[in-house]
Length: 301
Ligand code: PAF
Image 1 (cartoon, rainbow, N blue to C red):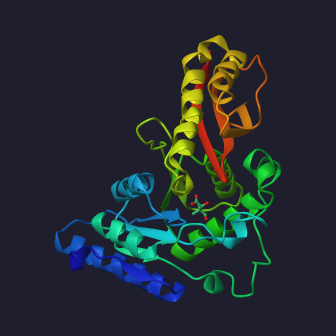
Image 2 (image 1 turned 180 degrees about the vertical axis):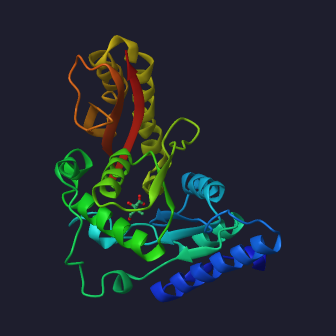
């Protein structure tokens, strides 16, 4: 491994902040030395993750590199966003492999705090509340999930102070709620959303895919196939799109559908059959014990 590109793995808020300030000063001095004035403060870009990095995360990292000067990847399996009986204990943790993958991408800083550092008094007593949309879809299946997710995202933004944070479109409801939080609470950070990365066969990449057995993985492809079928008939309306997706998904006995719905991207609320314009189809299902989600943009004329 090239020592110059090996990320600093930091587990302290003070150290992270002082390393970022130093990195910004170094970039500013180098720019001044090259006579490059007026470029503004070097930009920090955060990629928040829970680790177990896959090619989808590395796409976020590459986008982050193109958006700013200093990339920070956070790796923290946030207990606050897991409900009772969910997979907090078994969620894959592989810091060494993650850091090696980030080294190959030239990431300079990995923030890998402990739960004790993030929640010194146990579960944070002050929390961000996701509001009504936070109780729909993923929020209905996972009560409290989005409050926990927004709380840790707000904490990470306050710790790192990024100009931009990069999120994946796969978690469409998460993206909607983070964008709303940033607007409602007047954060300076803006977010950049990167399209879903898929395996051959269409399955959206997810750290949870590791838990799928081969037959389950094959069956799970019905989700993306259903979304693709829906997008191909979207010109015929919401009903036709839903029917096309159901026709692909419902025939898979290993796929237990939780929800299949079309939402208005401006409100994230379900649309009626007469909806026209941009929309997003969301799907969630259990395959074995693994909960999978996926989505696709629909253009309903
Ligand atoms: O998408 C995730 O991996 C998590 O929800 C996030 C944004 C890192 C917060 O824990």
